[in-house]
Length: 250
Ligand code: PEP
Image (cartoon, rainbow, N blue to C red; front, side, top):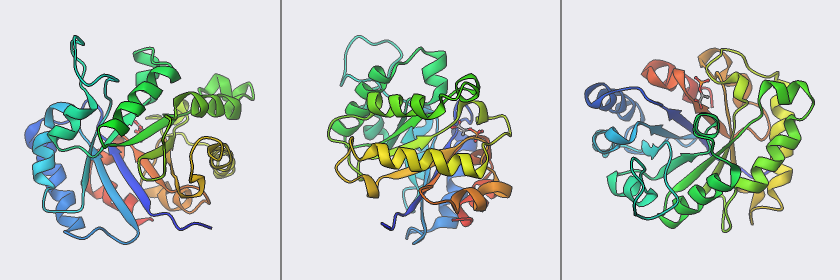
């Protein structure tokens, strides 16, 4: 099996202001230090308004910074939107695209997300491409086909293990405290790995993260599964102790 480094990514969503965001980032940076842990990479994705101060806080550490969304275009008349190049300019090296809160609250289709992921690659960012089924889709037995379709529709041309990461996040597990069974997570990640072979050049090397109510108490069992190469963490990423404990479970 290809050895893949874990990626532990924190999605801060619409939380934190400049001072508490910079303090949280500095706390993590102090724990990580200058050299990345051989087991994992650590990433924080703050709101776009504080990417710059957060990037400054972690500048002397191996902690990476990412955005939570980007526009497909480089610039133009797109009020309120942010180009991938602007995220890079602010200090980001990753960007999350296709989070279910974007797909649902902003009506983003897989085609839209593919445009955003393409922009991320153009700007030199690593795209974290999110996929995941709703509870109704899982109950109807469609979880795997929904995720397979999202992968086909969202992964950009030219995606490789060095510029793209997949995050499997069942919508019904995000922020709810509920998670799929370990068997279900393993089955979905196995399906995603297989599906990647038609979509990227180096499918075995692509990192596939699990997201949805990851916390210190369940991180080890989830991260111990085959084809789970890290976690995309929401709520628990806002507390340095919890986020660090999840990383220590790698
Ligand atoms: C997320 O927002 O991507 C997420 C997984 O949130 P939580 O960890 O809070 O479920």
